[in-house]
Image 1: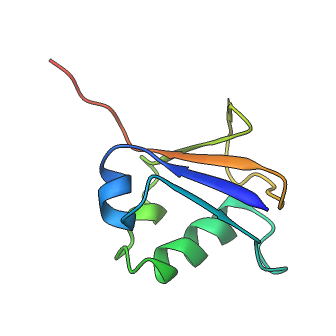
Image 2: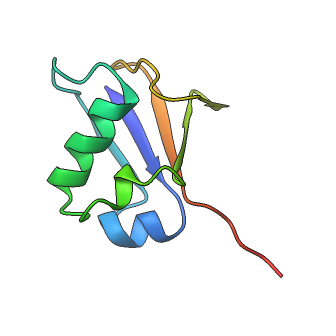
Length: 82
């Protein structure tokens, strides 16, 4: 099972900070995963934004990257400060 982690505003948008699930067979890349989750959580394209970075197994990836059912995948929104 894949473990998905949503940080910051993404936790508010998806309604959860973590989700553990089996990825469907047609989900092979981060692009597939983003589109599937965005539709499933009715995020109106938020998870498709290029400013949302992904880390797979604690490594930030350049997309599209391969994903599988044994990965921990973190969705990280941009961070602002001042």
